[in-house]
Every structure is written in structure tokens, then in C-alpha cells.
Amino acid sequence: MKNAEIARMFQAMADVMEIKGENPFRVNSYRNAARVISDLAEDVAAVAARGELTGLPGVGEGTAGKIEQYLAEGRMDAYEELTEGFPVGVLELLRIPGMGPKTVAKLMDERDVRSLDDLEKALQGGELEDVPGMRAKTIRKIRAGLDLVRRSQGRTLLGEALPLAHEVIEGLRARVKLDGAEAAGSLRRRKETVGDIDILVNSRAGDAEGVIEAFAGLDCASEVLAAGGTRGSIRTGQGLQVDLRVVPPESWGAALVYFTGSKAHNVKIRGLAHERGLKINEYGVFRGEERVAGATEEDVYATLGLPWIPPELREDRGEVEAAAAGALPGLIGPEDVLGDLHAHTNYSDGVLAPLDMARAAKAYGYRYIALTDHSKNLRIAGGLTEERLARRNDEIDAARAALKGFTILKGTEVDILKDGSLDYSDEVLAALDWVVASVHDHFGMSEKDMTERIVRAARSPHVDCIGHLTGRLIGTREGYAVDASAVLAACAETGTCLELNAQPDRLDITDLVCREAAQAGVKVALGSDAHSAESLRLMQFGIATARRGWLGPEDAINHLTAARLRKFLASRKG
DNA sequence: GCCGTTTTCGGCCCGACTGTTTTCAGTCG
Image (tube, rainbow, N blue to C red; front, side, top):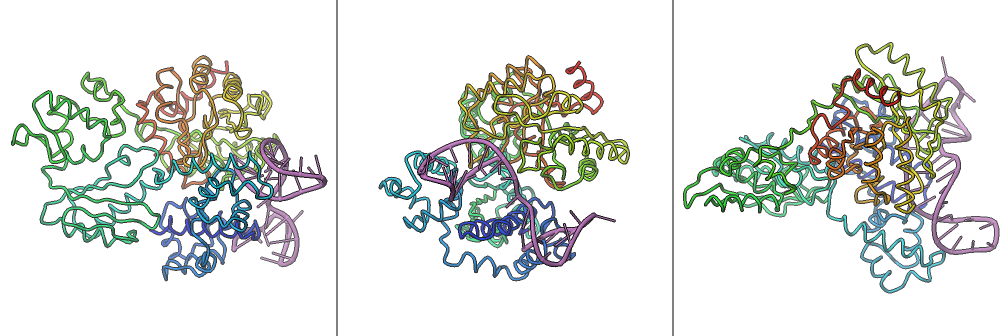
């Protein structure tokens, strides 16, 4: 599947055009194409085969032609022409907060800065100090931004890594027969970012070489770093390293435990093994020379007197003690999430009409969806004036009539203004079923001011939920400074929910705050923040984070049926 | 480059904030 690769190319072309100062509308259309392709649930090649590329929103003849050329020839003239002679490192510079295309172009022209390393040197040498229009504050901001990008470098979002891991495993299955294959490591623990992908394959020694050979021959392998008897290593087009290990059946469970980690978790269970006179490694559990377990994870944990521990918990955050005490939490799963509580329609910045979005949610298996379009303050995202909100609500009424057996909640993602007041009047908010309140501007406030701002919103009787608590964009933007505990305390007092935004680059609140919320008695509201039918499936990353945060079904408000949810909301307002 | 029950050409992407300025350019959501 070439979706990610093609999306990346359009994104890169947009970046280059922007630095070169080309027509911003044209740039935007490339970005739009990139987003549509990466959001696509199916293989873009399948869409192309049906001749339906131009049916995708924002894809016209030009874009379709480029995609078709890439699918047919593995290259794209437009991409090559644009990027020829353009230093690849320059695009990295755009990831620095506060550095946009103009600044990048200026530093390129005036100081020959062509990469993060060049920028580092220029900063150290004080070379930026006499660049026109650049003074101490700007330079400090760039310095801080560079540090942030450096820190996050080498990590890939779960949302990118997981589909890639599936692709690798499916690719292997298509070529060789496997008894079992699973992604281990931080990916299996569903950490928000991963450094690389570790894949284990369960196969007899005699078949190992064929597996490695198939692995090295995968479409996504742009470079083969190693290919031995039982291990292989490739690098994908996106620059992500994938390691493969072939493990014999008798060691499968032990290897899974060992390579899933975390390191701290493994240290802990090795300690337990030692107390029992056992030795545990990636090949099995041993008493002296004798292997006493190893074929399954359950067996391995059982030799330590423990039940199987879900991978998401394996961080040495008390899970081993809880397991020993028979007190592991029953974790929330996809089947427990009965509806999505954050989604946009084409009234604001989504792509589907309310009825179509509801149909998509129903097809996804939900019983309800909250349509939470932006409020008027957020103009760039098509925030709704009161008039447009009323029209959207009328359209929801019509959609309700057309879609029996499914509940559509009239919602909003209302901006929390600078002073903590809301972007709609109490009257407007009172008429809605579900109100998510989010911060979208003035990120630079002090922690004290930001906390007061959000707490004030949380205390509004019309606010059902605080959206993306910190506003972070993983690897791109630090969240705003906010005292999560203070917000939790306010939410606990008023019965306001806290959103777990499932977008893979947000995952906001974090796993740790999830756990704190549950302890504080604050319900978590899972929302995909979907802007299209395809992005409804991003919910899986929210669920993964909730599991890492030890949440059970009852900790999430989405576990309520539509009727109970309405009752709960009514009781809050009453 | 895309798009069209106002348009096949001319809009689309607006406004606030920041830092550098003395009237504005760049970034961001």
C-alpha cells in the first residue's frame, strides 16, 4: 500500500513550493491531497483501479495524474522536478515551531542553512544575530524549537507505525506460511511514539531463512540493513527501521515477553523468577537446564504465579504487584466504546454532511455520534456562527428522521476564550446535547492563567467536556502549560468529563492523566476528532491510550448507551 | 491545483498575535 508514501510526497512538494514562494492556494491543494490520501482507509491503488481518484475531495485531474504515474512507474515527474537540487534537510527545518517557509528561505539564502545541523552551527556561531528582522527573541524561539525537534527525532507516531507493522506482517503472510507473527516492543505496548518496529515470527528453524528472505523482499523495504539466519532488518521509505526475529514455537511466549518489554517490566519479572529459583530469558523460563515454560506468554507468567498481563500495562507502573494481588484492571476495549464524542461535519472543517457522518458512524458499529463543529472564534476551521449552527442543527433533525435506530447528538467544540468565557452564549449552549470546550488560541499564557482559564470553562454548567487538555502535537508542539490536577479537581466537582482526543499526534490526555482522572472520579470522553469517515477509525489509538492509562469500560462515558448518556447529561444540567 | 443550483474563470485563506518594526511580515490555528 503506497498511501503513506504518496501522501508524504505531496506534503513534501507543498513544503518545497511554499519555501520557493509559490501560489499559496496551489500549495494548499497539495496539502489537501496529502491529507485525503493519508486518511484513506483503502489502498489508493484500488481507488485508482476503479478510476475514481478524481472522486476524492480535493483531487482533480492534475493530482490524479501524478498519483497514477507513481502507481504505474514508481516515480513522479512533478516531485522530481520540484525536489531536484533542493536539499532534503531543509524540509526538516519547517518542523521547528516558529520557523515557517519565509524564515527557512531567508536562512537558506542569507546564511546557507540547509539542515538542522547547519542551523545548530549557525546558532552556536552567533550567525543569526545580524540577519535582518531577526533579534534576540526570535533567535531564542528558534533555539527552543530546535531543541524540541531534536528531542523528538527518531520517534515515529504510533498512528504511522502500527499500520506499517500490519503491512509488514500481511506482506510476510502473503509470501510465506507463518504460525504466528506479532509486533512486539513499544508498538505492542501502544506507546504514543516508537523508535523502531520489532516483529516476531513464530516459525521452525528450518523455515527461518525463507521468512527472512521474504522480509528483505517486501515492497516497503527501501534498504536492507541485515538479513541473517534468524534475524533481518530493513529501513522503510519513511526512514523507519523494522527488525524481524524468527523464533521457534517453544520460545514464542518467552520471546514475546522479552521483546515486548518494557525493560523495567522485564527487570521486575526477572527478579520474581530469581526469587523462585528460576531463570527467565527470551528462550524460555528455566530451572537449571530444564525449560519449564516458554511456548506462550500465559505459561511464562504462570511460572511466576501471575496472570497474563496486557502489554499496554507493562511499564512497571504497579502492574506486576496488581497482577500478584489478583487486582489487574479489566481494560476497556473497542467493543466497550458505543459512540464517538468528537467529530466534525462539513459545516466546519469536516468533509461530510451531518447525515453522511452519522451513517459512517453507524456503519463503523457505533450507536451514536456527537457532531461537534467548531464555534465562530475559530474562523480558519469554518467555526459556526449562531445562524449556521442553527442551520446545522436543523439538518441534524432531518438526519435523525432519516436514520432510525441511531442517535445523533447536537454538539459543539466551543472555543474557550482568553478569559475562560465561552464562544457561544449560555442560551445557545443550553440548547445543545453535548458541549466540548477547547482552547485554540493564546497558547503562550502562564500556567496559572491557563489553568484558571480552563477551570472556569470546566465550571460552566453548559460544558460537558474539556477537549484536548494540553493542545500538544506530539513531536511538533509542546502542550500549553496547564495544571492537569487542578483541572481534574474542578471536573470532579462539577461532573465535567475530560476528553481523550484519539488523533495519533494528540493523544491528549495522556495515559498518565487518564489514570489520574479515573482515580479522581472524572469520566473520560473518547473522541476521534474525525473530519472524515475514514478518520473515525483513529479511535483505536484513543482506546490504546486509555488502556495504557488503566481505564476500564466504566471509566469512559462512551460506555453508556445513548439513552443513559442523555440521562446523565440531563442530570448534570438539572 | 480545485471547484461551480450564484461562476469553466476567478475565488479559495481569515484574523490574531508576535516581534520587529514606525507600518508590517511571518506564523499559526
